[in-house]
Image (cartoon, rainbow over all chains, first blue to last red; front, side, top):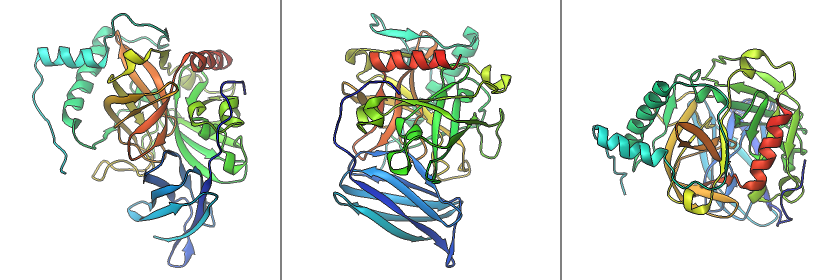
Length: 92
Length: 287
């Protein structure tokens, strides 16, 4: 690491949760933000063996989240408040 | 409002104008490091013509174009990343080669604050094309970023690098790399830029959609700030770390690193003089 940049405010929210299908965890599903009223990192999460995922660094605002495994897709709006740690259950 | 699709046949004059928009810059300030592999003028012209033709099709729409021949230049220099965070979480992103063993990407691909910081490892697959990994996959454990990202979480300093291991196969070390440069505001405003990467949704709806496929799009820069710039190129999660490049005298020059989505315009960390110097140093470390 080297020293390019000065301190700025921290990101304020995370979105985490579990992806399920038929009551069972879904591993290797992609979870990502596809639209948002505040700027967000264009990183996608992959669910683990227990269907868990975590996306971080969101400023307050609304976001559209998409979870996908092949052609099975779930989209929803997520509202992030300052200091939020959103916990979602997503059914594909 | 429905998108307006402009589609027309290119003549030589149109091609020259489009080529100019894509590439030529007079009175260029700043500094450039050139691409590191050879191409003939004919290859450059053919790719330019193809890019210009595709650009004519996509103006006014949200369309992305799937790259099928990912073993060709420049697509083979764009890498799909599978990131294993320190806390066990997994992510997917994009990076691009600038040297034999140096892959540039977003800072938030190599240091994830909410998932333990530096990753345990990142699997790097240059030119991945769905299930096909034409150059194989390399597991990397050496990463670089800057204080502005790691310590301060500053969006303006969201960039980093992956240094591939010394035993990286020769076929990957020989893929060549993007050039990169820093340009003044006046040269970036409304400039046509290209972005290609690995969207997590597998691309636009239709027969070309496939997980881990590479998608390209080109549009003009819409706004320029001191440390970032924005564009209307469609991106989704997974494309963080994609190169944002333009053509300069037939050379592909990265001018930004895609990092962020936003309904008002997606954006890149701009390659400024300090970013340029770090990229140069990291390229040396991976040589």
